[in-house]
Image (cartoon, rainbow, N blue to C red; front, side, top):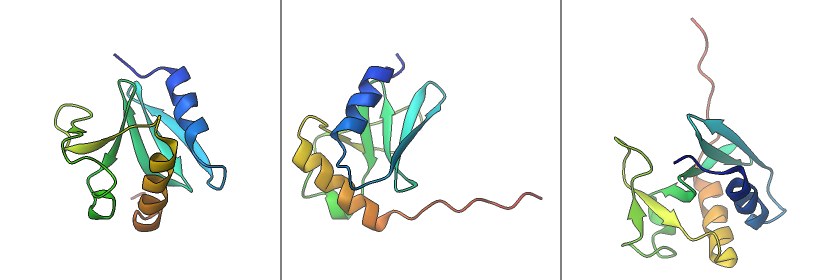
Length: 105
């Protein structure tokens, strides 16, 4: 089941206004970019983030899952808990780099 546009809009609405937010549909699911950094992966109306040490204290260790077959284990984020959700975003935004485009050959 693919994620719905309504859910993507809800997730984007939960993010503080201090960030530049955009999303991109990929293979029926979505990647949400914060300040041009790919931070949130949305699959089946569930928000996933990479397992990074800086946010391990904010997320219950048992709240993990696989966004798609063959993926590494990710944290599952509770979007409804807006304060914690935005704290996670702030910490991730500091450590995840902007992707570098590869030069065409």
